[in-house]
Every structure is written in C-alpha cells, then in structure tokens.
Image 1 (cartoon, rainbow, N blue to C red):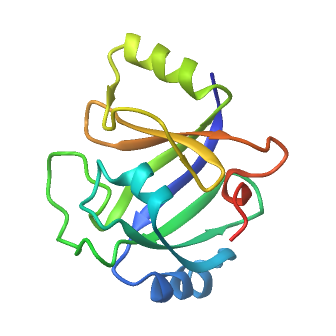
Image 2: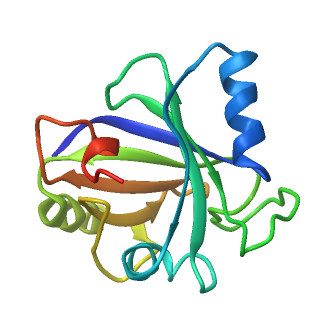
Length: 161
C-alpha cells in the first residue's frame, strides 16, 4: 500500500529561472539541478498525458535529500497555456501532480481501481528506475504512483543521470 509522499510538481515556463527563484527566494536546496529528458522511456511514461514528442526539463528542490521534495518541471515542446478550470492536465502552470510512493504498484493500482479511482493511463511504465502509473482524484488533481526499484534510495535517485 502507500508508503508516503514522494513529490509535488509545479509546471513552470522556464525551469532554470524557477530553480533560481525557489532557491534564492524561498531558500530551498537545489537537490538535482535542471536536466532534460526525452526519448523512449519518458514517451512510455507520459505519451498518454501530453502530445509526442514528450520532452521535459526538470529540477528537484527541497529541504533535505529524501522523498519529500518539489519537482519544478517544464514541457518545452508542449507549449504552456494559462491555467483553465476543469480536466486533468500536467502541463498547466502551478501544481500539476502529486507523487505517491507505494510498495507494490500492481496491487495498489488494482485496489484503487476497485475503489473507483480513475486512472489516466492504461498501464504501467518503467522510467528513470521507477515503475509508474497516473490517476486523478474526483476534482482533477493528478497523481503519479511510484514504485522504487532500489528501496534504500529516494525516488528521485533511482536513475542516475
């Protein structure tokens, strides 16, 4: 079942500028400086959520090197539109999704589906050393379930860039 909160993601139009602001203005530590992801793994993870080609730029900021961090994320190929009400989206500015760590992704997904949870993707992806799947709450907040491959490491260190 669920083990804890992994991250919350904020979609921004410029991840480098946002990383500076969150670090300099809010005092968060830059745990993983801005990086770019593109290719087969990220396509598998997110191609049902945003148009292909799936390209993202992201940085991890927080108060310590654990699973409780903020992910700053930019989708340079998707275009950013002003926040609109209704419908789940991972490309609008502001909070876009919340990451939840679980110990068994398949079991957790099956249990959530039995409880009427609406999943946004048809299956499970393997990306950046994690197994992932996406769902929404009844009000449109997007969540990603994460199963770590290496238990001793935080979710964001499962895949060394």
